[in-house]
Length: 229
Image 1: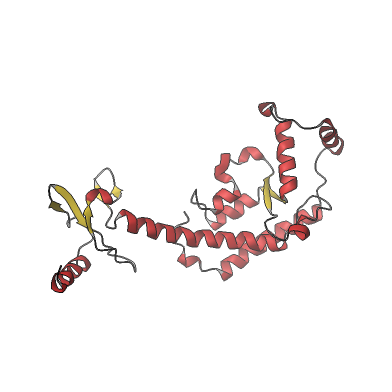
Image 2: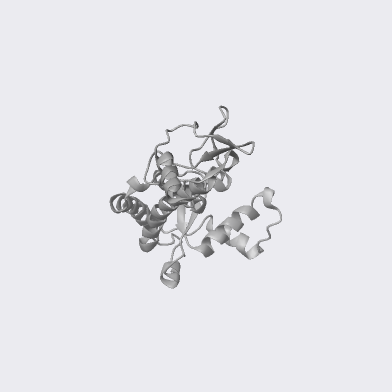
């Protein structure tokens, strides 16, 4: 292709209207040019088979203006921005919070990656969709506010106490008969009636969560978030 024809093609792409009218037939196969009429990205400019474009409206048979590669790349960038903001929120909590089990020193021992969120009422989790880790990764379009609301339904604990509590809950539930817990552990739970929570730590963690949320709103640029998943 000569430089003149390349320039003509570029000019044609940038002047295309926001519609599907740029579809052409090549060797009996529908093709269209990848372009974007909005935003900073202009598309790759390739003329590709129509099947290389996702549907924008399946019922009407309307395709996206950007090809699958360009659209997926843009979506991944948008998703990465949202994930980083939600991760910064969790890191702010991890920096100051403590496991609410009395005398637990996991934070001082492990420094990082010790933080777990244990749902107070597991039946409210709705499967994995409402797990904090699942929400941070952006697999269910959870916003920063959704994440805050879900954290309010949990207790902040370390990995060890989270695993221990989960298995104890399951061992006492007939649905999970395959979980075997020692008689000493069961007797200990019945003796205590519940975990030995530190109410002081619980209240302090609640304040830390709200403070971390406010700091995230102030320090992170949420205007960059085009979509939360």
